[in-house]
Amino acid sequence: MKIYTKTGDDGTTGLLGAGRLTKEHPRIEAYGTVDELNAALGVARALGPDRGGDALLGELQDDLFAVGAALADPDPAGRFHNAITAAHVARLEETIDALEAELTPLHQFILPTGSPPAAQVHLARTVCRRAEREVLRLAHQPGEHVPPILVVYLNRLSDLLFVMGRILNHRAGVADVPWRGL
Image (cartoon, rainbow, N blue to C red):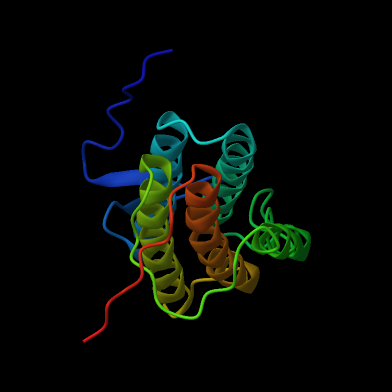
C-alpha cells in the first residue's frame, strides 16, 4: 500500500465513515492539532524521560489517537465518535493526584523550562491548550457534534502535562524555576 493516495490533491480529506471536508475545516484543524500534540509528546519521549514518565507519555499518546478518531468521526452513532469516556478523565485525575503527592506544593508561578523532556512536556501543554480551543471552536459550529467529554479530557490533560513537566524535572534533580514577577 502506498502512503500517497492523491485523494487530497483537491484540498479535501476523508473522515472516518463517509464524507470529505476541506483541509481548513474546523474539524480538520481540531484533530490536526491533537495530532500535533501527540507528536510533541513523542518528542518528549525521544528526549529520554525516566521510565515511568515514558510509560505515561505512551499511554497519553494512545489516548490522543482515540481523541483524534472521535474528532474524525462526526457521526454521533459512529464507531469512534465516543472513544473517550469519563473513565479516561478519571484516570488523568488519579494520575495528577499521584504525581502531585511527589512534589512540593507550588506557591508561585514557574517558568516552563528545565530538563529537555520536561521543557518539551511544557511545550506540549501549550499545544494541548490550543487543541482544546480548536475543539471548542468546532463544537460551536452549527450542525457539528463534538462529544463534550473531549473538551473535559483536553482540559484535564493540560493540567496533567503541567504536573508532568514538574515531576520530570523533580525526578531529574532539576528545580522549578520561579517567575520573578513584574
